[in-house]
Image 1 (cartoon, rainbow, N blue to C red):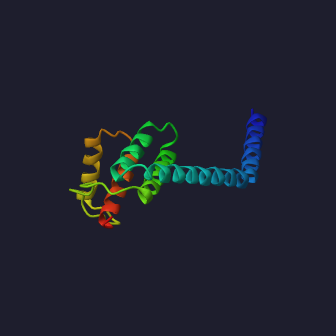
Image 2 (image 1 turned 60 degrees about the vertical axis):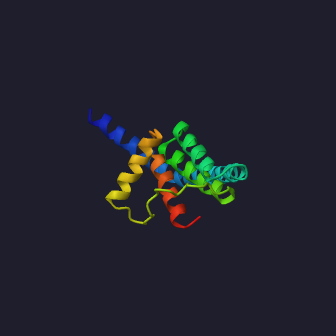
Image 3 (image 1 turned 120 degrees about the vertical axis):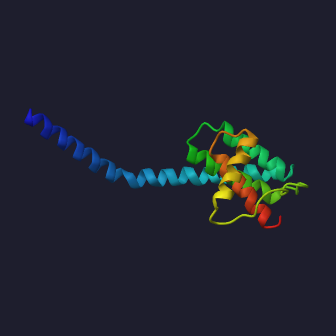
Length: 144
């Protein structure tokens, strides 16, 4: 029995050592895929922005994040990148910033409640909605 546990321990140590040796390659591959995803979302967002307004960008980004089947992290980053890029080339929407509270780097309880309520109003179930609504606050506070 003792031999079994010793063998298991050695196999686990070897596995950890192997993973440690391979991790830089894994990280490099992940970073490369992540940058490609960001570039693709940015390009898609800018293309949509040329044909729509701020509200159209927001609606499409929200739809993308709500239907995203990837990890929550990937969906949130993808949707946020897409939205910001879309707004770069979109037309203003009349009334888009009406009722939107000012953006602050450190949201207080009232900001958090407003964002949560806004996502509920929109029928959004994903946590990505909160990021998109915060971006709306930010662009509205910038006066765009």
